[in-house]
Amino acid sequence: MKDKEVIYYKFKKNYVWLVLNLLVLYFLINCAVKHPMLWHWDQMQIMLGLFSTTLLMWSWKYLCKIPVAVISEESIKIDHCHPLAWKDIAGAQYRTAHCCFKKLPIIVLYPRAKLQYKYNFLQKMIIDSDFTAFSIPLYDISKEDHEKVAKLLTQYLGKIEKEEKQQ
Image (cartoon, rainbow, N blue to C red):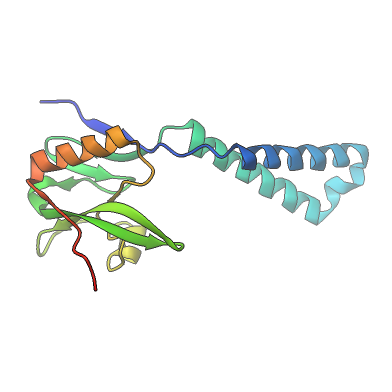
């Protein structure tokens, strides 16, 4: 049995937000140290919590490896969803999804009819949208990983259909 192939997100680093976040945190803490009464002010506590949380989110997004897909001989696992067996997939198609006024490239996996699958909350919410329950995002991964995903999907599913142009 071969090892699992793991594809990770490759986010573009946005250091401007990091620098601004660190500056605001520095000024907030500096003001609170010079004026200790600010520690008891509700708005100050909310701002410190907000900027600390966004700093932690930035760190998690850019410093941790976040998997897009885990592909094995038996199944594919997309993001944090349950694995989907290859025998339960009817086909795949390249598609463009619309999100926040952007067109984002994805690969949609079509499940077989009457699939018994435990959907998570997010999959239930987006099952009928452009970005379906079984979509692999191609917009935040490297070109090499994009080609690797396409090659592996072709190996297990056959041909990946091209997107149909809408009128």
